[in-house]
Length: 324
Ligand code: ATP
Image 1 (cartoon, rainbow, N blue to C red):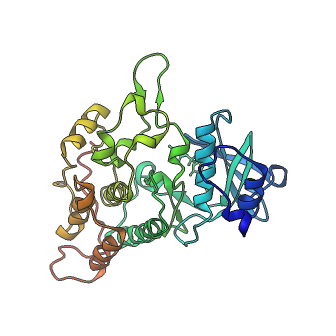
Image 2 (image 1 turned 135 degrees about the vertical axis):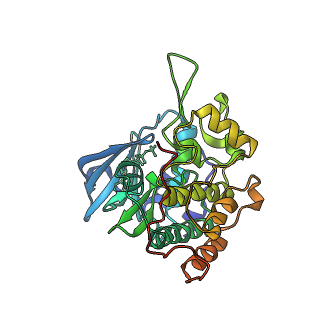
Image 3 (image 1 turned 60 degrees about the vertical axis):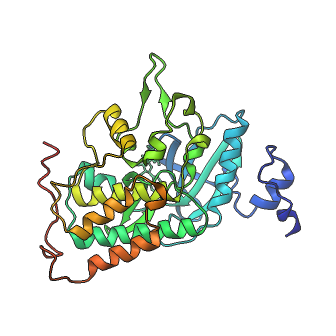
């Protein structure tokens, strides 16, 4: 409609006109939602189980509504969400855009994120299952990229496993809404969330500066940096741990910045399996594959090959020597 095409995404003001023309279809009045129990807290705010025409997840944002830039980022992300519809991407249902009530409503994911089986329950995935999950993630990510959406925070905590084998990607694009890391008020140190650094491509790691700790505008996130993060998720599936496990942040930053990669010596996997890791972790963003190419590489792993040393149903886990 003509009103909608009038919308200027760079318009900092939150005019009634733009709200009704662009967001009305997706705007959920705060009082229409039934907020039930708290599911968890993250850097962005709180996530509640809720009811709105069925079970939903309600993500409430801790946004300083006087901060125009942050509010603007939030609105822009909501714009982006509207465009998504894929079975491996969480279903966006609407948003509450009335400050101070800022929330995104999505389908409620069943099951747990990939984080729990890997890092908490220490479950092992055989190659067949790892390929199945990675393929679905690549499918969902390829879709987001085709829509022009860079995830910016792809990690095992943001991938749900529904019915234990269907991957659903959440939290895409929201990274710019939050603060990158919180500086510790008592000192000059930065509190970095557990495991976060190992998803960051070299070009991001080398751009991390204390002055960048506000919004991510200055960090060079790209489709290729998402591919790097995917490589780390692929490693987590195979190895059951994060890259550079238990190493101090300074050491990870130094190594990744220098182009040093996680060693794969302890990983009992075929060359093709490891090659996917190496391609994703290429130092130069332009050398990393696209998700379309990754799908093909993962597809090749499914084909039975005489030279595969182990049966696909055999657990592929490493000795976990790096953990002990
Ligand atoms: P971080 O802030 O570091 O990304 P996080 O991913 O745990 O950490 P949130 O994304 O805010 O933080 O999620 C908080 C909790 O809500 C997590 O336990 C997450 O699994 C859960 N959650 C998020 N989205 C959904 C959803 N659509 N359905 C069900 N649970 C969800």
